[in-house]
Length: 356
Image 1 (cartoon, one colour):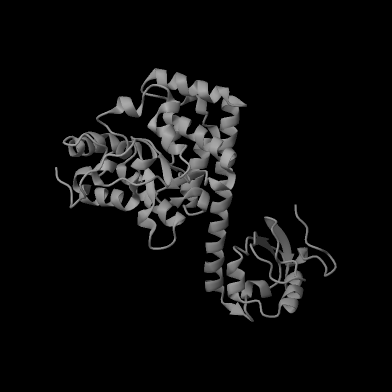
Image 2 (spheres, rainbow, N blue to C red):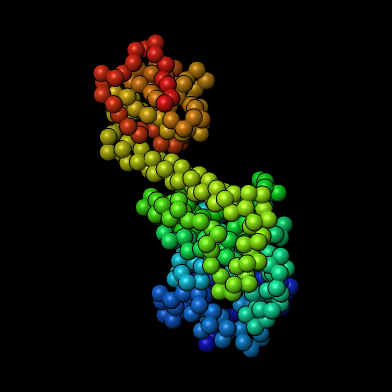
C-alpha cells in the first residue's frame, strides 16, 4: 500500500494533538475507495491503517500530519466507512460556512490512536484514556456523534462514556462548548440540516433506547463505564432524559428547516401580490411559525413564540403598518404558512390571536 505525497512523519503526544483534518480524511477515503467500497472501520483499520503505519509504528494522524482537535468524534466501527466521512464532511460545512471547512479537525480513535501501542492509549482507567484526554482538552469545541437510523453508537459502552463527558462539559463550559452534534450523511440533525425521514427514524429509535443496555467487547469496560454513569446525579434515568431532550430539540430544528423550505416552494408556486403570497389574500386562518426578527415595532407578526395564530385581517392590519413587507421579509424570518382553516372561523378585528 502507498500513500499520496506526504510530509515526513512527526510523532506527537497522545490525545488532542493527534486530530486529523476533514480534508485529509476525505483524501484517504477517495484514494482508497476502490478498496473500501461498502466496508466498515474494522476493515479500514486492519487492512489500511495498520499496514500503512506499520513501518513507523505511529498513528495515522501522525503519519500524514496531525493537528490540534476541533471536535471529538463518537461513532460505531460497524458503520460503513462512507457514513463517517460524509457525516463529518456535512458537519464541517455546517460548522464553517466559508471555504476553509476542509481545515476543521477531528479526533477519531482509529486514526488518532497509535494502533501499535494501544496499552498507552487505553492504560486501564477510562479517565486516563486518550479518548478522555482529547475530549476534555480546552481546544475541543464539541462532540460529533455519527448516527444512522439504528443509533448504533448509543448502544456501545465507550460511546456512552463519551456522551457522559459531553454532557458534563456542556454544564461546566456552557457557551464555550458546542455540546453534542448529531451527525448524519445528509446533515447535522440538531442543525436542522437532515431529512425528516432520517430524523424521525433516529427519534423513534431513541424514544425507547435505554443506555444501561449499551454493550462492550470487554465486559470490564462495560462495568467500569456503567459505574461512571451511576455515580452521576440521577444515573441512567438522567442520562436517558438528557439524550432525549437533545433529540427533541433537534426534531424542532428539523421541523423549522422543513417549513422554511416549504414556504419558499409555496411562495414560488403561488406567486405574489403586493409583495405577499396570494394565499394570504384569499381569507382563512394561517399560522406563523417561529420568526427571528420583528417586522415592525407596532406589528404583532414578529414574535419569538413557536406558533402565533394569525387571521387575514390581522395580517392586513400589520401590512398597512409595515407598508413594504416583501417576499424576502417573509423568507428571512423562517417558515410562515403552516395550515389554514375555513373562512367562517375568522375572528373579528377586535379579537386578538391566541395560542392553544
